[in-house]
Length: 303
Image (cartoon, rainbow, N blue to C red; front, side, top):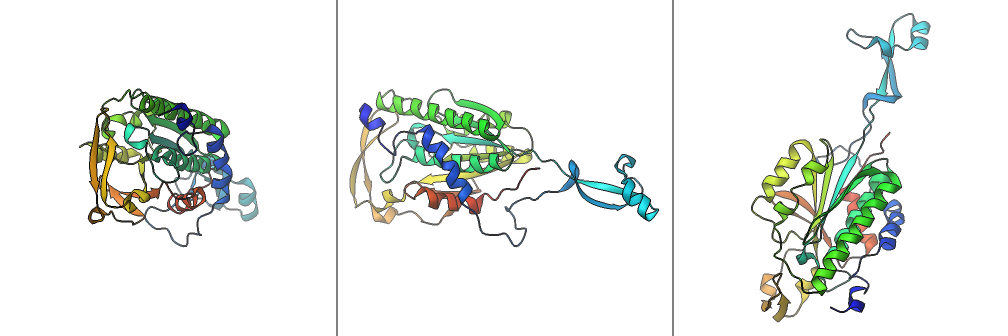
């Protein structure tokens, strides 16, 4: 692959492009939620924050430090304040930039689509008061950015995405192929990088998932919330029947036959390793992808 090809739109990953997705993410709104359904969103809860949520009459066991003097004086009975819980939302974005992600026949490579999806999610999180971190899986060492808040957190994550993507592209262009590491092994650091209560969002094509991926996700789910984003390229399912040349991860070339009898399902949601995954098409326009994400990843404002 020549240097010019590496810089072609949809092949390379630009920091400016991912930064510009902030406006797309903020302009996209999910439809209003009418009921608390499984997998939906959380709201501000009563707890031990600084903002007062309510004032009520004292009951045995209440903390006397929370007495409301005004209400107590007016009524002649003890009243206490209840506070909104401070919730620090932390999200670890995991980008799969293993060799199998560096291809695409429509708008962008699947690797670029994965980065776009994670950027859209990340911008929404930090704009609502949360923190984001990054684990970018590459053919070599992963690129890690610890969770940080606001604009700085997203700039760190974007810098890591661009660095890891460039590294993967350079290896592919130089034909310095390495055996692709199974996904369950590649994401071994995810639990260590996030505290209990955090969310982990993995964007991948889930090629070569490894036998232990389900167990790995189950371990994460004990004290964290894993969310899966499946990146596909639906255009490949519409190719004419025939034999197509491919390049294998070890550098060898082969020919495979594609026929309509192997057409895949086109439903928007599917299951990966026994868990529901949001299915995104790399060929879809970014605004359409943002809408899909807004519906699936409903988030709350953090006090």
